[in-house]
Amino acid sequence: MQPQASKLSLSSGEFSYYPAGEGRPLVYLHPAGGVRWTKVLDELAKSFRLYAPIAPGFDGTQAHASVKSMKGLAALVGEFIEKVVGGPCDLIGCSFGGYLAAWLAAERPALVDHLVLECPAGFRPKGYAGRPPDPEALKKLLFLHPEKLPPESKTLEVEAANRRMLPHYGYSPDTDEELLARIPSIDKLTLILHGTADRMIPKESVQLLKSRLPHAYLVYIWDAAHAIEVDQPERMLAVLLDFLQRSEGFMVNWGTLAVNPD
Amino acid sequence: MKFSFFHLMPYTHLDLESHDWPFPNRYFDPQKASALYRGYVESMIHAESCGFDWVGCNEHHFSPYGMMANPNLIGGALAYSTQRSKIAITGNLVPLNNPIRIAEEYAMLDCMSGGRLVAGLMRGIPHEYLAYNIPPGESWERQREAVQLILKAWTEPEPFGWEGKHYQYRQVSIWPKPMQKPHPPLVISASNADSARFAAEVRATMGMVLLADLPSGKECIRVYREAAKASGWEPAPENVLVGMHTCIAETDEEARRHLSQGLKYFDQVLMGGLQASQRIVLQKTRYFESEESRDRWKSRLDKRRTLTLDEQIERGTVLCGSPETVVKQIRRIHAELGHGVFNFTVKVGTLPDEVIRRGMELFRDRVLPHVREL
Image 1 (cartoon, each protein chain N blue to C red):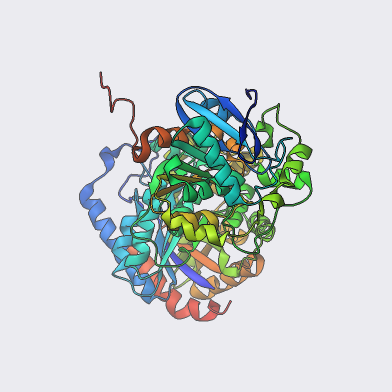
Image 2 (spheres, rainbow over the protein chains, first blue to last red):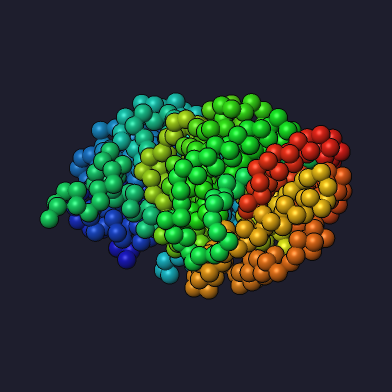
């Protein structure tokens, strides 16, 4: 269930976010279509204090005139974390949000604990087919199982309006070379997720990230397209929760008797 | 045309009677099996010098039909005793096994053989699912997922994890990786439309054995070619493998006599017990996704069972005769199907090894020179 949005004032303007749940802080950065409150977010809110900030200009919020780059947006999210979370937190970014999360981890490492890059944008090979303008074609590209979309999802038109904000942040579909050069400096324990049927972000993008990040795990989610959270929420949660709760130990199959045998 | 020497490795020391599945292994004599294994492997090694391009075997469980619980062990024996021929494991039964183990063992075989592996990724015939306690209704889902996982294990440049429906691995990074790049050529059984489509989607060579008749084989090839086109590629003739029971002797009469004898054991003993278990799996589970595929499978087996050897020869579903006759048969079947790999199943039931060996030499001297250019 999508919570009510909260607002606060940051240095460049008003900033909105969705808070939910209790526990260790976890910040979730949304994709280009805006915040999509999925089963994954609902489940995360059962174990974490979840914050889902809205990039200014998305989902009906006002853009900040002075924030005009992904790096600038990362600085703004950093300011939000300092003010609201008050210290380091786990960070998940989905697609556009993954791109943003990588910038934030590069720029403000002290604010990030575990880093999760869910089919992150920002590292596509040059010339890779772009996003189709037709909403229905885009839907086919995003979802392998559109029937699993939450019923209260925003319309394709609203999502399209959100995507029109991308140029405001100087977003390019191709690889951000400046950020790529910074990737090896990100020493956070990182989980990269990619759908085996993702045609928006090619596997070469996540392979590149995996090869440059010093402490990263790449996990493919079977039978998922770009919108992993919609197509395969259970599979994503199984990996994600293990990773957030057990760090490197997520690689271990704990079985049922490993910790507390009868 | 490329030729493949395929060995079922049957256990041949049984009386002519059938048993229910699983075939009681009190009839299994390890001493006899030891001699059989040795003879079979020697014959496979000899196949290379008789001009065969591929030498191979496959996987079966719990019956004398084939003593190959793990064909990769035979592949290991062939890797250092052959030099040129492809080692065609056709194949491992993917949904029954750990896909990572398959990726690893195949990669080993590819490296050990200097890049000569042909990697069969088979779904397996219905009764095999009883042996390994895998739900037959999951066979397609497992096959599709596992094949993609195996391809990833071979080709990913970095360690990766896999969160699937049937398979979960938090980190995979196999040692060794295959020698052939991006990976060894694949063969996938395609005896019905569903499997032909799947083979085309993953760019595998399609394999068809135990044909009921040539028109049904032709139809599968058409479906395969169409599906390949839809997937953005055009199969070469070598991407179509057709397999048949084969017996070559000095005369037609001699070949028919030997093959008839061998087929009696094949049908009554080796296939006998399997039919009941196959029927149970087919009736009680969703091994086939469509009823059409299930009915086609049943009718294919029924048809084969009721046909005489002469009728099978006439239909072009076995190769049997003198070298000159077999040349004509190969040419006729090739003209119908346009395939590029001909797979000979040479050990049919109790067909004597010395007959097979003589047939291999006849193939080398009097068949191959006339069909190589096809």
